[in-house]
Image 1: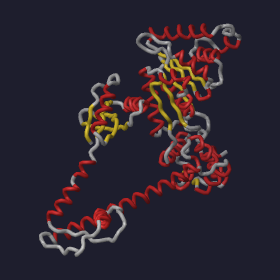
Image 2 (image 1 turned 90 degrees about the horizontal axis):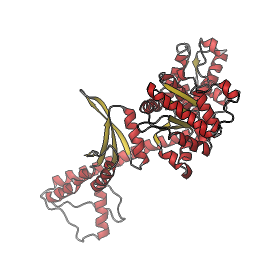
Image 3 (image 1 turned 60 degrees about the vertical axis):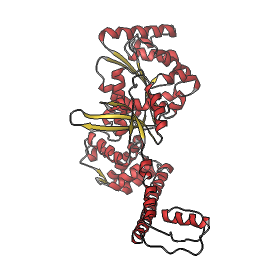
Image 4 (image 1 turned 180 degrees about the vertical axis):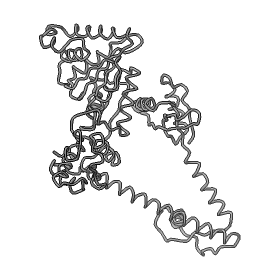
Length: 457
């Protein structure tokens, strides 16, 4: 109904994982590039995780559409399989056997070992053709542990130079915990690339909605008000599947109201109709953001107050430099002297009478300045430059590997007129030089990174 009213050639917010609707947010674009890189380099095991509805299956289908004819693919969507059934599905998708042959029971009496040998023979036959094989298993968090162990065994199908089968496990967030269980330790150690899909930001949500409207052919026929898009993000937390559900219902409401402008009221009514409410997490994020702004404002006020106090004290010192200052008849107790110093530096000190600081001469001012000079030097930090890469996915892979080893990592970019943009990977920062040198020695022991450099920032 509403598709015809708005002039769509397709359903813009269908819940099916159609790859042509893949919106490459920052997170989805990184995952897409990483998968392409891993497949091209035959990296072995890859694990992609994400919350329910973040677009994992759509991403997989989009990757499959980008592959050339020299890459044979198998996509397993049903994880509730036995070891033998999994092998039969893989052989069927690779074209080794047909669906009709399996239905006729051709492989019914074949043992698991025979199925593995058949798969291995097929993979070896691809080598003279310079072809490869890719296995993607969706909803991998539901795989039985014995099947996961079988997948580990499949990863052992290799030559002396390369893996014969590229395996991608795609699943919900608990897949990471499953792989880290003690009984799956051997499988977890074979994972070379890990990536977690993130929900869309507020800006990405607006772009996502516009992207799907455009692909469906109705980008100019209907629009969402800015406040309506705010509500879409608040109700869905940036989860694409929920965005589709909510926006489809909002378009239906717009059709009933005969309007081409989706208002906040239409989105709120649609959210109520599909039983969506702003999540507690969204509310918490908004409260935390406001608290952070307040904290920053308070911190700035404190810094300004300290700066003003110090400036006034310095000016007074310069005016009275060289002149004898009046001295109290009785030297204040130690506790009161500590309070005086704390007041001059803007810090909270011990309780006692607030006595103005006595400045005797220019020497006192110079001494104070000398005590302040080392503060700038204390801000120096050290980092370890582990590597620079022409392509960002290579840097992302290294960051993931270093993070798995327990290092605190970050990325950087440098631009050159002659060499273009390079992506750097750092470990750190460190406040202590000795600690940075110790980790530098450890990083240099990693294969291929013996030239890791220590840099000062």
